[in-house]
Image (cartoon, rainbow, N blue to C red; front, top):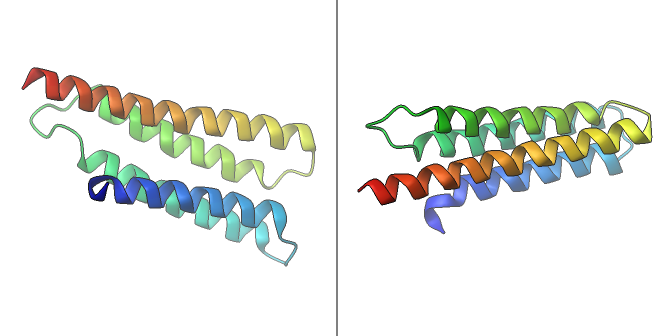
Amino acid sequence: MKKNILIILGIVFIVVGVAVAYFTNFGLSDVTGFAVTMFGAGMATSQLWQKRDKDKKTWLAVLSVILVGAGAFVLGLGQFTQETMVTIISSIFGLAAIIGGLIVAAIQAKTAKQIE
């Protein structure tokens, strides 16, 4: 659990950022939500990058970081729209990318343990 604390905190910050942007109505709530979302993505991707196998530079580590970062960006970007369908579609694609990035990171960790 302690090894994955930054990933967990990053995902929590992503959720908090999305909630701030969707459910609050102060002047810069969209920008604040986007900033918190991207901060969470930075935390999660830094932990994913540090957990990679340092002996091998594999494309799976880069893919997992890109998917988590892009998913958080799409989630944050969807907060600026006023249309409900665009918000729902961007949320679905953002969450799918984040979950895909975490699955790719788990696959990479599993294959690295099998090689040893």
